[in-house]
Image 1 (cartoon, rainbow, N blue to C red):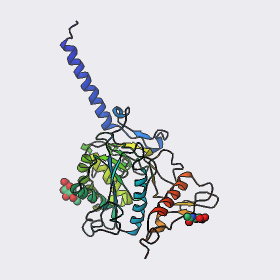
Image 2: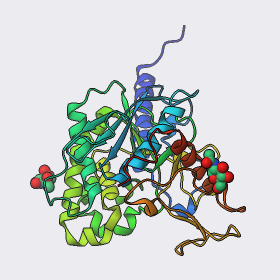
Image 3: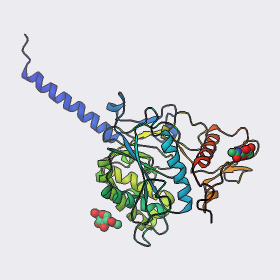
Amino acid sequence: MKRVSPLFLVLLVLGSLFAAYNLLTMIIHYKTSSSENWDLSDPIIRMPENLKEGGGSNSKYHVALTATDAPYSQWQCRIMYYWYKKVQDMPRSDMGKFTRILHSGKPDNLMEEIPTVVVDPLPEGLDRGYIVLNRPWAFVQWLEKATIDEEYILMAEPDHVFVNSLPNLAHGNHPAGFPFFYIKPAEHEHIIRKYYPKDKGPVTDIDPIGNSPVIIRKSVLEEISPTWMNVSLRMKDDPETDKEFGWVLEMYAYAVASALHGVRHILRKDFMVQPPWDLEVGKKFIIHYTYGCDYNLKGELTYGKIGEWRFDKRSYLSGPPPRNLSLPPPGVPESVVRLVKMVNEATANIPNWDTFNRG
Ligand SMILES: *[C@@H]1O[C@H](CO)[C@@H](O)[C@H](O)[C@H]1NC(C)=O
Ligand SMILES: *[C@@H]1O[C@H](CO)[C@@H](O)[C@H](O)[C@H]1NC(C)=O
């Protein structure tokens, strides 16, 4: 038997350490390409190299939906919960239980219908009318007081509709998020540096994401949430930041907070489909109906101009949309048709849809 020289062993150990170090720096310094350069045929835009092979984590995730008691939030939550129940037990789903985190400070009339935990809103005036600033505080409180069986959490929003079975897209301590084309930390370096000083690393460390949708290990979210809250309040407090980030301030706050904790997200383009911009649902997991869908009767998009046919959640600020919305005219993309059909299916089956919240 050949003797292995001690020098060889030393080199072997150094070699593996070097490889591990490379992998680590690669994960840490991996630069996100600009959205224009993303390969849209590959739903996974960024994945740490060592995770590319092999399946994801099999641990279940808890669906956590932050919401208010406003009728506008309530009708969306009812539809959201309806589709959760439909897809929860589908093959390949890792969905666990569901909680609506109600950050209005008191129970509302959906407590029986949707599993809900009530948390406090921010002290009077702190959100300055920017309600979503309550989200990080809601998560901090919920994580502190709730017993959560699952190891992972999906942070979801009322205007999400589950359209396909959703596996746990996170891997170990790497959460999975959706890359938003309008979150561009590198283009706001002068602002970002107020919260992410140079010694922390390049601004490209900051993922182009918001807190939702994100699937994240509970222990990692427990670390990030207080920082997320702190950063979002400081950003809101700084007039320059407030002006520059506007309605996406809280998304930047989450992105910066996670980077401050050294957390990089796996970016999943297939996490959501956003009608009317994305035309087909395909194998995507969530329909996000944040944009208005306006079409003329020829099926042409008239974005920014009220269409002869339209579906826009903002048409229903004070109460739910009626049952059986009219389907779009021929020629309208499948994603929009699918969305309206899913809304209609939910409203047809949810008891008291027509009478609930109607003044
Ligand atoms: C955020 O954290 C910093 C440093 O820990 C602290 O000085 C500051 O008061 C916190 N700000 C808020 C709004 O909680
Ligand atoms: C829904 O509306 C269509 C017309 O837009 C009508 O033909 C159909 O019968 C309605 N369905 C129900 C269940 O009310």
